[in-house]
Image (cartoon, rainbow, N blue to C red; front, top):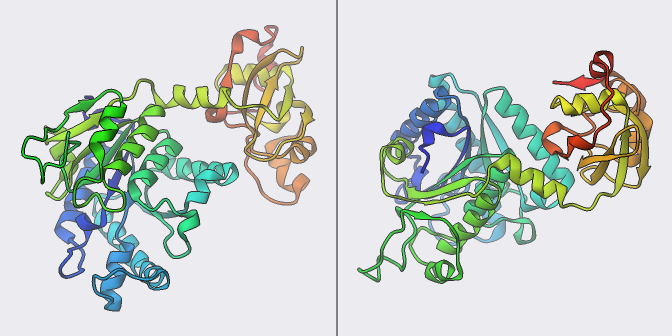
Length: 388
């Protein structure tokens, strides 16, 4: 498999047992320092890094003296509220010596299930990464109930990997990979170095094996692998308790890699292209040229709006002659788009009465077939209303 050092964007999932000592409830500071060294190494190589980290409830229960027993929802949420601020501070203090800025991002299942919230999360994370920040993502346990919970950070990490377009996902676990059976019970169980396709036979091997595979066991890791690999992201399961777990993975530590058959950008384009468009945005020649050059669609290039759609819905994108060039996810509703069409991005707030994003459709949220575009475009057209 491609080494971590070749990753363009990597998501790392960290379980609470790696961060917090089970006996004392205290933070494993030496381990966190070693992880910070690994993150610095990855960023120095040019990679964006996102950490999906458990630990808030584990830290909070220690502070509140709630012991190791199962907690009712109210106490678990209280522990999360107390522990979350400590978890964020621990990452901030661990990464600051390397000149790395951190950000806390709390999400729930609703944030990925609702397309508008998903687009907000994607835009925020993309902006943080563009600024060199390392986001620390966790489920918002202080408000989440069973109806809006991921329930485990394996699946959350996979969803975050999809959201940010990561090409590698690492699940730091208490086992060193995926086995044909529970190695605790079956000495003949063998670890897979790589899995190219998750077959029914592979799924049958998962069971609920392993001790730390908390909340769903190895099954949740297979679900995570399906989500990640379908979106072009390779995924590894490896033992994370030792110091510098990412460097160890780079230098050959035991692991199971799940391979991806495409790249994140191509997978996202196919997903967008398969959606049913709820309306059409008709563009002028300058906007068509901008899209051909890889730019985002700005209001200045919009000539006409048809259909009824909300923010986050798929819309068809058409050129001046009516030829459909592709489709994308609109950042505005049909009524908002009609108000701002033909105007510069700097005028959006005055027109709508509230600040909003510059692009109608970001270039990452488009699937285009530009060979259908109208060809007669001047340089003057191309320079109108584009975003780099």
